[in-house]
Length: 360
Image 1: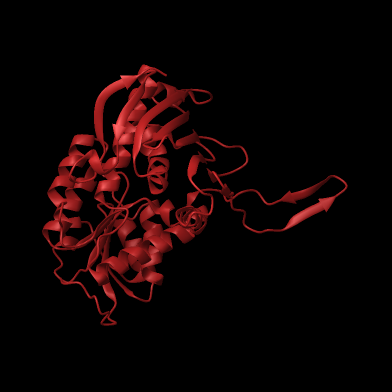
Image 2: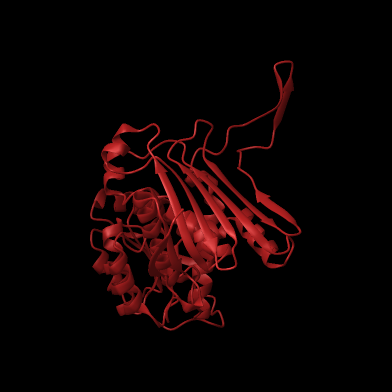
């Protein structure tokens, strides 16, 4: 189908592949958007697809191919398991259907790069679901840094701690903390500083035996270096006793901007037992990033209508995965890994490993 640059006013006809937890979030947003005809939903567990059909009226099927072969679709949102992402991205592009795919592109870097090469120059938007770029607070900090409010950006601090570890079965197939969790923070780092040149990571096992048994870390700290010497620190933990911890700080020559955690309300209690007592932080990503998911969808729809490239796109997905690979290597070897995510990283703009190390 062709782009709708002038805006004919017709709703864009979209399908959804995958109706699990994150698919349910996207389904609600698709159904609520006045500019969307939420037409089709696919899941091999047909009961899940039928549940969304019952809620929103989208036609349910077990087959993703059946949705993609619907010649009337403008776009598809892919929320299926990670091993299916590459094939579904390629199938959508082959059918001239715009695609918004949840991260990561794949757990295997070379397979992700092959997908990147195959869809390069696609006529329709190919977008990767790094939704945190669309969080109103994080986006505002990025816009104000770009406007020069803090002067030259010197340091960026990103904190991301989950309230509790994912189940053991999920951990064993997740690809590890750097590919599964920190990958969001790698993309956020590149949102501010696209050209990352060094990665130093330390992983630890501090509290979870089943994460240790899976050969993964439950805690991690990563330091990235930008091409201009800028410093980025990322702090991750798979648990947080006080709720979902999501903060960002941008420090520069002229000042600092920070985005703090969210609470359900801004009410504070003051009594003889304490002051400034507040609600706990939002329980998890579904609540914390609800606005980000809506804004992400809005960007995807605008790209379809205007026929423009989506951001973050496939290059960003591959670059974040490359940083995750470098972090895993650094944590395993104790060495700093040199990379490049800038304009000299190749014709696609993806990250390329430089192939040398420097001592910590």
